Length: 323
Length: 257
Image 1 (tube, rainbow over the protein chains, first blue to last red):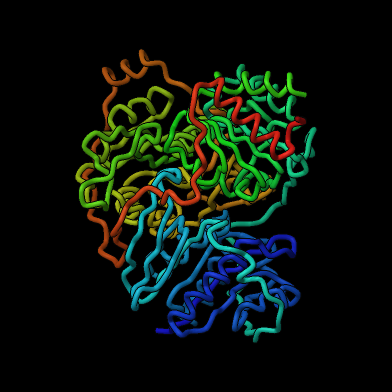
Image 2 (cartoon, rainbow over the protein chains, first blue to last red):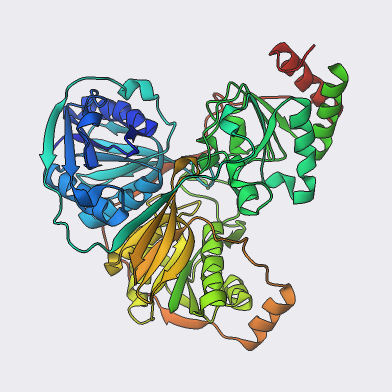
């Protein structure tokens, strides 16, 4: 068994995902505890250019081949399984992203190792791996002891600072043989970019964001009026977009946009981890929710536990009359 | 095409979640359960495929969390078969063990396409869709919103990435897709139709096989997040709260004073 810590590095369009740097920072803490090396693992093609950004790692393991670009779950799982099996790291970190969801459970199943998902933290106590998952829509934290000599830990984005893992350098590069390219069970057809919308919510200074608490499409004007009074725009959590009440271009969160406005007003949004991922970087966060235990209050600066239909119209009026 | 939709019951997050005396699990004595919302999306996608292209839709659940009414609701919505795996309590709380049990049951159930929720609010040890695919030796894709047939031997799945970007992937059948969202909002089954299904239709019962023994992880503490970093809660009547908010926004220069 090795004491190394491995980090699966995700990249799309030549850009390394922020969460990879967060995990390299976390991975360094774990490597210090085990006394092992920190390994960055990447799969794709033409990856040499990414290596210099991975200076936080002791070594970068690259698995390259024509069948590995663009990403497909099947081919990448085989590539990472070969790399991870060869190095047998103590802990392998993957992100709780789309690719991480394919790969984390896929690697765990293929290698027969435990997986702990949705983690905000992982650490070693003595020789024991302890990982803290955020579950039940972000309402509870489950701290678990992990059995066995190896484990896969899937980390939520935004769980540790990216700065800790962002370092340029020239880490040692090791090439891992790509799995034999044969007929693929999963074949990439095309990438679909989001349709250009009426507004680009990533550029807005003020967002009034609406969630399930709005109850009906007919109530959307309540948030639109507040957004207008504040000189901002309406955005939304996933369920509102899935219902078709607002266009996809307004969606904040994991599969939507990441926004960093000066003001983010979360209205009737409980704050599942997938949503928080897209907005926790906002300068000022105000949340209005009827549920005092809603996880949104863990990231908001100011909170109102109450009925949005009472508070919002009053606030809108007061803003209008003070201007 | 035979579509199988594994579903499960999960705690309803609208209710307050209580932690048991040992502090390691939920207090399940008064827990209200509901169909996992991602599984509901998976069922809808299956029914949309059936409506448009014709298919036989089979819903399958472990007999944990009292799934009967939910299974009848699935039949009322248009599923053709509903199967309850009895005696599968050993798998409760573990996606991996659930996948073992489902995989063994699926050996006797025709399946070209398996659609299930990409995640659940309590799948701490990972996602059923992927574990099930691996147990059956099938390809899998997670975070899918939208499935279309591609000839008789494959489907095209739309996989979502960050920033609203999606990929179209062609996946050989049989396969397992972890559904994030159906192309349309889940349909509603009127209570009368569910009642009628309960009166006229039957759930099939199949004995659950034992899950495999394997090293995993054990929860030693379940707790609400620490109070640190929590929002300052503004107290008072709606009028007072609105005044306080206005003062804060003015102070930060977000509203002209």
